[in-house]
Length: 86
Image (cartoon, rainbow, N blue to C red; front, side, top):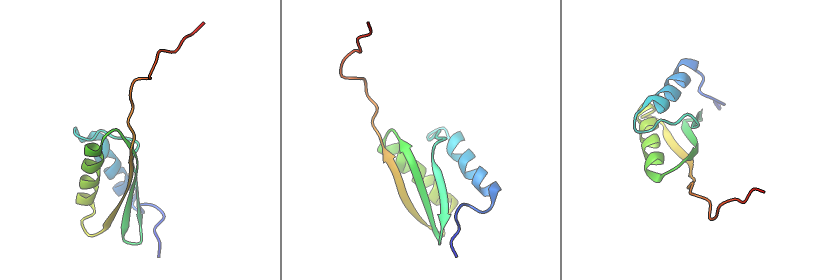
């Protein structure tokens, strides 16, 4: 039977708190969903290193489940030219 979301709201809160409070991660926008023995991790981060750190921490919380990593790395840079406001 499929689990649409982490069924134990305390476990859900603990994972989100862990991702937010970990000094090397500090991410609030990551979604963690358990489904059929798999943990889906999705969201957007700024670097591959941050993505890998998140997946490693979640894997540590769910050692007996397969982790599906759907975290997208998005680069944010300065705009190519200044915006002219008239």
